[in-house]
Image: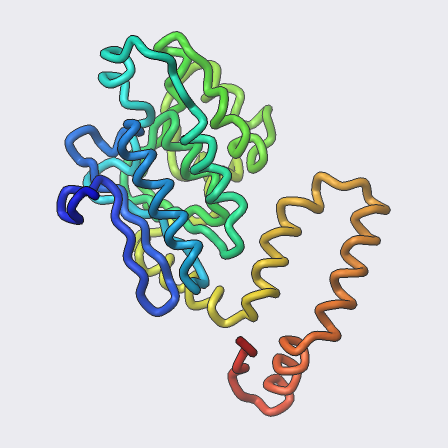
Length: 254
């Protein structure tokens, strides 16, 4: 096992918040095989812990520079994108909300990593670029989380040209959820908000945000009717409504 000080990705759990930090500053947190493997392991470990949210942050001036092109150029073996797909699926499908905290530039595959999170908080001077076409490839696998957030027409120009775009443009198209001067403070407020809700209610809300838009209208109404009635009959709802009446903070059943 690599010693903690030598790891490219670190996990810390404090007060039910898991913080996963990318720290491969020598290559601007590029998606090397080792970084992706360590990121997958950290996310898996975080999911095994009783956490309420997972925050993905970074050290250094870049959140992620995309694929490690030096590693790709030096490797004559087959390319295996499955670990990166697994990481993005984990961020998207985790029971608890995932939050990207972005204080630096994001390029190519890094945008896919960021877009896989439920909430994305970026500093107002951060820039983005989908540069794949400029090196002869397409933003293929990362298009899955990106196009779940952004209408194709809004992201077409950045994808087709590779031209950089701003945090304000990313917010306008729906790629990010928050633009802030203080990224860490905004992330902390979001974590506090998540922790104020009942764990299952938050998990079900995350699930419906992704699934309801994919359903036929009548099927969506039926599934959500069943879910709503089940939750209103549950212990969390009884505690939440009692706390509301008694003007106190709820204590969620474990």
